[in-house]
Image (tube, rainbow, N blue to C red; front, side):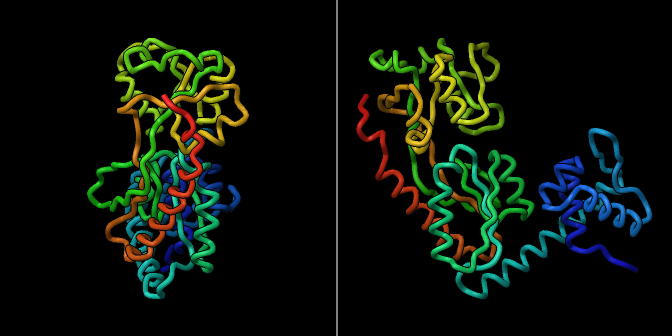
Amino acid sequence: MISPTLKQLRYFDALARFQHFGRAAEASSISQPALSLQIKELEQMVQTPLVERSARKVRLTAMGEDFVRKAREVLRAMDELEDLMRASKGPLAGRFRLGVIPTVAPYLLPATINTLSERFPEIDLEIRESVTRSLVDDLLESRLDAAIVALPISEPSLREFSLFQENFVLVRPTSDANKPIPGPDTLRTMRLLLLEEGHCFRDQALSFCEITKTQPRQMMEGSSLSTLVQMVSAGMGLTLIPEIAVFLETRAADVSVARFPTPSPSRTIGMIWRKSNPLADQLMQVGAIVRGVGQTARQHDPMQAISV
């Protein structure tokens, strides 16, 4: 009997996750026709349909659901075996899959990638930027080795390694620069610009302003911190951003940046990975490197000259 290849199992796992041939093919770095052919070959092996095909979406059949569960068990076992082999070689080498949340990636990744590449010349970095929930799911399914997120995650099977803590700052139009800094009670009555649903930074900002999801509010949404800052520059409202983003996002925008009085809103950025990962020692080294990158970035913090 012919057995499925690991590539075919990974392709089917991607199709099950994205439920779309095009997006699954893109995530798998192959063409859509090639992925479709591999799925058809799988169906021929099991002699039954694994997916229901429609113009807009793909749904797994009952057999497909059972098949993907078993496939993921195999893929997890293979990933753990690869990790074990890499751990025995000493310095980190080969493929290393790192996830990063969007409110950290543009500001921390360039220096992190350069430093990791210098420290581990044999490393092959694969970066994925996504929201926290998606990164956690990928970690639990062994599709990532580690992820940089806002802590805490409170997932029992994941190790949390604190990197640095940073405050949130207020970004508002330049014309408002000399006005008193609004507290949470005032912010709730103003036009607040926030990230779209799914971003943990959005939830943290809402928490500081003591706004619940069920409360009616005058609010607009953006897909990135850059979009939010440009909306503020256009006079559409005000927003909160993390300190790490201040220099890159505000240097070319007509906005005013101010600190909140103590206790100011803040977050802890950390790195997480599976406790069962045999690369634990190497991951601690990576965490220490990223922590150093974060500390260096904060030494050049443009907010140091800004007072309340």
